[in-house]
Length: 319
Ligand code: AMP
Ligand code: MG
Image (tube, rainbow, N blue to C red; front, side):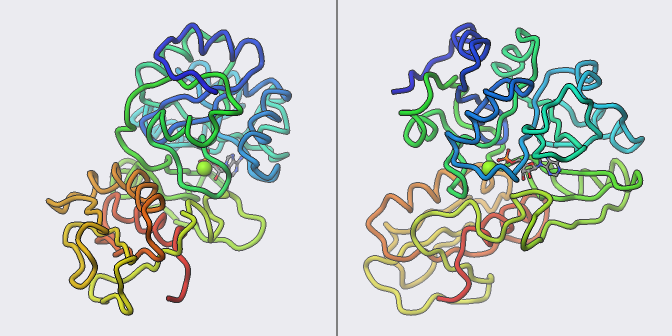
């Protein structure tokens, strides 16, 4: 069973031995391994049961180190990197040969991010290799936002979870790529579109795909609990409720659903607070004795947009 602790040198020793560990970031907890070691990367795919076509994000702690792994930073990427990192933004950049094909699923770009978490930055500074770290959950299930979530699901397969407390943002990073130097958003996430636009101007958003997704967060079913979730627009009312109906709402509970079965993401109607609670509350509802869960869409602004994206992927299409 994984040990949960705050010992950076313990995590470092496991990583240097080629093993994988749970690691906190400000977005969600990652399952970390040496991004330059194909055996460690294979271990990540196998522990997560993640398909090999789904490339990993490479985490490091300085822009200087980023240049060890990428050949070139397009101008908008440089601007974003300098103003947002460390932060919840992943950039897709042309990779150097040093980065194994396994890490990027054979693509010639590598996803790179400098995470904003003091423990993890200290860990990254102490290592002479970067960390591949997809979310530390079985593929397709709800992402973990506490060390305990990681231990609950992957604890029997990994030796250690570095505990950095609950994640401050609670949504995966926003992913931006640059085709012909033009920035395109491939996954909505912890950095709001409005903030990105303010930095580099208008962006194309291309976050929907069916087969062969550019980013797997683009798969239509992802981040999903085991119980059916039905997503409603703000004006819609649930139907056919009973004692085993649950709900995940933004600020106001639904009428007609037992109040003890409803979790309120942000009683004050704050989308940032809602984002932070989203995955933990979905997990909690998944563990309650419920047969179905209704969720209500948030206002489509700021992080509300990324929360709606995750709710959509967590939900089934028809009640
Ligand atoms: P996760 O770390 O589980 O949130 O997943 C990492 C995300 O980054 C996935 O959606 C990947 O598909 C995406 N990603 C990583 N590398 C690339 C790349 N080179 N091109 C496109 N998407 C990427
Ligand atoms: Mg994931």
